[in-house]
Image (cartoon, rainbow, N blue to C red):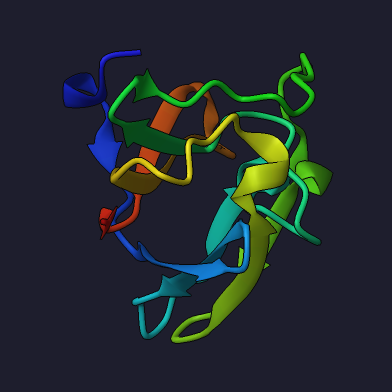
Length: 139
């Protein structure tokens, strides 16, 4: 999917922080609804929950290129209303993910890490919004 052809989500913003904890990289992702009066609906499997991912929602680029995803890849049918998490106006959700459990990462390499996911809307499978975080640079 060409990101240039997909609109940025109009009301959701994603803020990423990544910390080195011993031999692990722990990502903290906060997704916030910036609307004062509209809820934001995001497909549940596009939001890391409980430290689990079933798609490579993070892009980790190091000296050796893109870090391969080693977590499960799950093919899903088109989402239904029950497949969405709703974020109330002016509210947010926060989750943590141990990236070293899910990606082959060279901890000795400088890297750039970013969250990104194409969220289908409830209006149909052709309507997609890209939710992308800030990029984090680690030396």
